[in-house]
Image (cartoon, rainbow, N blue to C red):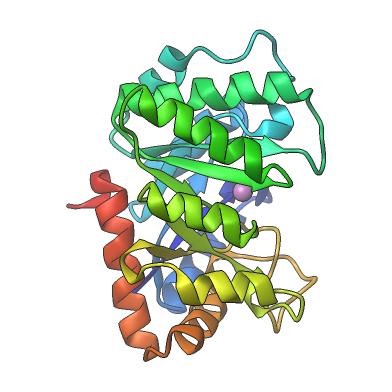
Length: 259
Ligand code: NI
């Protein structure tokens, strides 16, 4: 079985759509998935979806593009309290995004640190969105880890090899998306070949970033299978071995999913 470690099921909002998408995922061998919040309201929505479906987990957090929506930034205790729910397995998605640059850098940093503190308070891993901000991501991770342990996942890895190396040194996890299948994904494929086997996961980030052969279409958790097939090829593993490996890694990072 495969797990989609990062999707946004709340964006599939037509009546009955979520049930259909989840059923299609299971049929494609993607038996569990994580729906992740980007605002407080959407984090609560993610929890509601996880309550409705046995094989869906939730993460709660504030995305950097929404860091400035409500100021001051979120209190870590507020996220940690939401994270006490049995179906919430991690904090996120949070991080820094200097590409879209929707909130000032200092506000993004305060928000990222608040999310990290929530992860520490809750004793859960944080799912990190890093876009065009590699140096600040590495700096903040280093500083915050000096203040107390937390596990982290660089989701939809699309950063530099330098950040990958720093994250490896810190024992971070890496999740790969449909970008692995894109012609321009050469740098990401290089990192996917290099990171330790016990640190790799797969995801869709659906509805965004559909892998080939569905590139440009709306993505959905079932398509995790295409990214996993590409990752298996890169790692020189049989598809079943890659599925076992990434699911085992998912359970060792997201310990609340061990049932
Ligand atoms: Ni996402």
